[in-house]
Length: 43
Image (cartoon, rainbow, N blue to C red):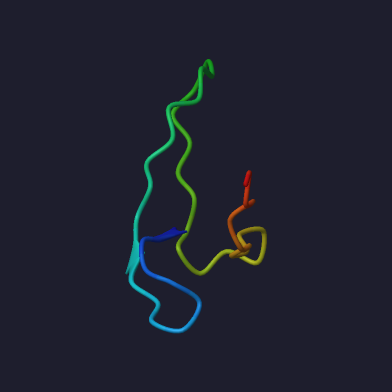
């Protein structure tokens, strides 16, 4: 998931990743392996 908003007004959306693998794998949206992290500010 990606926050398209700000830290004060969050607007979350799904980001789909293309990962080259030999099998089809699916991540559960409730997986303990997924975590939301703040974006890196490059300025």
